[in-house]
Length: 524
Image 1 (cartoon, one colour):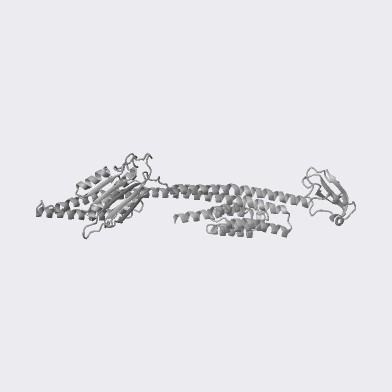
Image 2 (cartoon, helix red, strand yellow):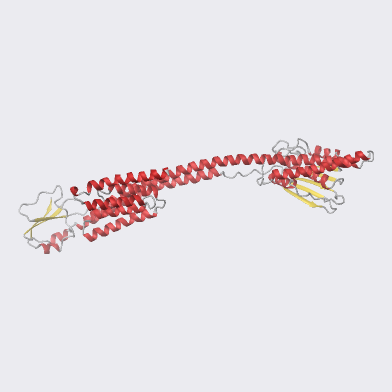
């Protein structure tokens, strides 16, 4: 409401200001009439009322009122209105085409009026000059101000959007970090709970224990299995919606693959471990991926095929595969591929050798992918389960995508360059066009008053005005040019014509008395 009131106050002040020249220059004391005053005030009121919705319409109405008053377009009553509505049209109008059509139509209509009324062509040139200075120039200034305001507003919107995006990125990074922690909890605690279940299962069937102890061991095994399932469900909820993987996973426990296998063997699993001797340490991410593949394979074997023999093999340039990371960057001595394979024997009755859903293999596949490798799983011919991975010694370098802020900044820079080009080149092109137009009008005017030397030689003293007119050009010069001597006394009329096309002097002078030529001379 307050903004609406300000707009109305501005429109009222604008109307009162533009009415002042009309009241001062169109009243009867200044050669006008009260009818002209009333029409002018009413036209300006309509223009102000339509200015916000249709910015080009008021400009067209004021141009029409100015042309009706003067064919040169420059009038004391409406010049201020031309400047004001030209600026407002450029400032308010989103499209440029309506104004350009208007600028093209005004010279055409003005030229037609000049030819129909028989006025000199210089009047049309004055109209074009008035249009350029009083209408087009303010319109260009308005377009520049509009472009500048839009760029400033876009800059603030971009800054606000970047701030909100940064906050969203921070929130997303916190969620991803929580998801990584949750995944690591699933990997490590699930593995430990599976080993506890294996130990409890061994105690449950140990004949050295009494029935109560065996029953307690069975309860412990079932509790560990239930805890594993609940952990998987909870971690699944925490990791839900984490579609974007991270290239910086949380480090696993600080142990080698050999130590991991030894811990599983100590818990009662039948594990056989082979590792090819390697020369070069692996990058941190590759070593972590190797550790996780082995850990996930042992966990699945303990959970889904308890008691079955398990074979773990690490082949290739795996000198650092036994730890969580070696040097953090392979020195390039090896090359080739690191191959990890965890194979378990057939599952017991009523059990499946395949991992049952969950997010362990999904998260493992993402970790192997980020390390530049591939993960595979299959059922062996004996009914067991094999988990394998092929990884490069060094993960590929990530390709950072161009941030959105950089793209937005580049787009804003292109907009600025285009806006500056329009502001600079349009006025320059207009000035060049006006210069060419002025030169053309000058040549045309000079040609109309140029008397050919051969025609001048054919003219004889004593000929009548009509006889001389057969050799004369369309127009004579407007009076005696400067620096030309005064006319001889006793002449009724003297006409002056150009003797050269591109110079003001010398000129031909033809003087008549009683309708006959009495004097012809080239002066000075």
